[in-house]
Amino acid sequence: MNQEIVIPSTHGALLTIDLAALAENWRRLAAQAPEADCAAVVKADAYGCGLARVLPVLWAAGCRTFFVAHLSEGVAARAILPEARIYVLNGLLPGLGPTLAAHDLRPVLGSRDELAEWAALAEASGRTRPAALHVDTGMNRLGLSVPEALALSGDPLIGRAGIALLMTHLVSAELASDPINARQMADFAAVRAAHPGVPGSFANSSGIFLGVAAHHDLLRPGYALFGGNPTPWKPNPMRPVVRLEAQIAQIRDVAAGETCGYNGRWRAAEPRRLATLSMGYADGYPRAASGRGIALVGGVRCPILGLISMDLIILDVTDAPAAARGATATLIGDGLDVDTVGRAAGTIGYEILTGLGSRYVRHYVTGTGA
Image 1 (tube, rainbow, N blue to C red):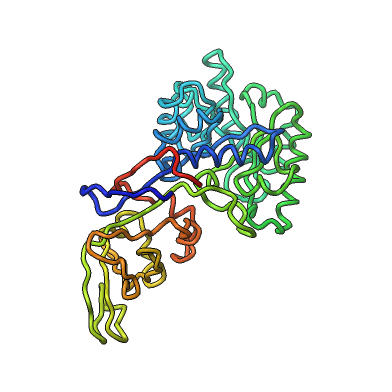
Image 2 (tube, helix red, strand yellow; image 1 turned 120 degrees about the horizontal axis):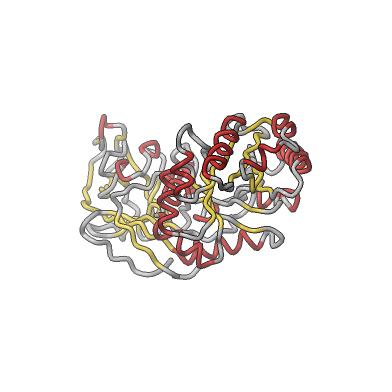
């Protein structure tokens, strides 16, 4: 994205979201497995990018199946896409069945109790409603164990609960050589064989790149749609989607021995020039990046100094001649992708994306180049 950005005065930072890149990422992922359908995981407000803007773009690109985490997200998604297939990943919490049914949402069922409750709702209403069956092949988080899923082979409860999809969740898909991937593939294949005719979903973003054996009938990318690298063992095949920029609010010179920020965590070894950005951890930029992260000012890498404040970040711009009041600093973009920012904060790009704050001015573009 190379267009000039004019940051509105309502906030000191601007989050630009490239919807054309998002759509292209979905098409690229779908092309990895033309024999399968490609869904989209859009939980956490579409990974911080805004559900209301993201869903219509993915629908226009050809996506017809979506996954969210919570019932509230499903209700919001249904209001945007009346005809989509929408699965709620976190299962069927007690008593929520009628609301799921009222909004034509599909719970991802992970226990026999959930199966029985969903089936009972269908019987009471006289209408079988679709759902997914989650089989736990290694996460030990949600889902039926593999033996439990195998034991349900031929059980009429599967039909009464309207199971339209079998799915599991990969433990280490981003580590392509981890032997647990092969074990999960084998376990899931056994479960599918025990439930013939029911489509399967196995591959998340990284799982798509584990080969044909991981594809099954429905791909389930999330992170990669929004520019995260699904193949950390090689260059990122996805287009960047988010760009975060902030205005420099003030420039100051400090002498050797002076400190900056709370608790004086950073001390100048020699005279330096500092710039303060009008954004902080309340905007979703992680405090853990204090003293570790960087921003780009005029293409120059400028370290983040001291502790990141709630609303302000201090940079060392001594070597950045473009630094001036009102100039732009880039915190995500131009090579500083979400994975790089996550590593600098001791976390992952997923947390950077999903933590993008509500205070940013959001600017949506529909195509600014690769």
